[in-house]
Image 1 (cartoon, one colour):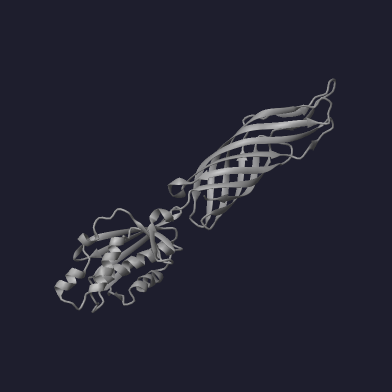
Image 2 (cartoon, rainbow, N blue to C red):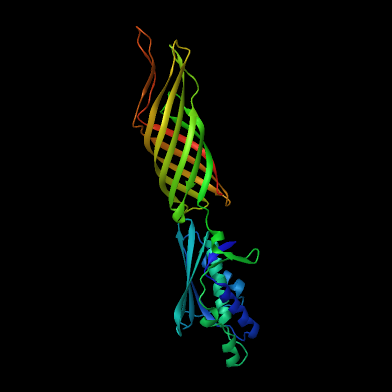
Length: 337
């Protein structure tokens, strides 16, 4: 488990230094207050996280004047932010913050912090001067700038940037499109996506070259080819992580080409393709490096060319006139470098 937090090495060091010089004689009574959105760890689970660090935890009565530890969890896009406020009748209010990828991680990290803080304040059997010397003070802790991440599985402490959600994805889709040609266009679409700002904003650039089967006509046959690039911008939600959903607007530009065959003097013709549109996607993050996605998109071409075979002295044969709306569906896989 990796959780980014503002629990600093010097604080931890000061706490353990206090343990080395003092032996607890009695447990201070404290109050735990836990507030979290639906789907997060329960209040009982939070209390267990505190007791895992401080098994002798003693809770205060309802009207008892004592220190209170108020833990509040909030979702922020793909992350969960936690705040720990320490309310003490005899001291100014203190505040700590924690960020992580799941509610359980943040709740457990705050529970660890509470346990450490209670432990640092536990009374000792030593004299008052010894106890005052062994207890960490703000001067002992000092001003610390760099936050850490706690990796309990390996017992290491790393910089918080290592736990940052990856926000760049490179991938490929298999896509089928109806509307630009008389039959479905099939082809791969390569894409590069970027989801900055806690993954709320989504930007994507993609390109494809797709083909239809040969379209048979009375005068001749034709095969259509579409070569386009697409720019998209939208919003992504990871509220139900590891699942995510995305809505975006887009603009496509490229070439639509029809290559004639079998007819006497058959030629190839190309037309400019310009089409604004919109797309929706749902996806599943598979670990930290992969994600799978399904896409449905719609477009309204600004130019609607008419492809046809012409024969001298006879009526022409229309092969296809581009539809006023086009639809595309795809399934893809992305890699987070």
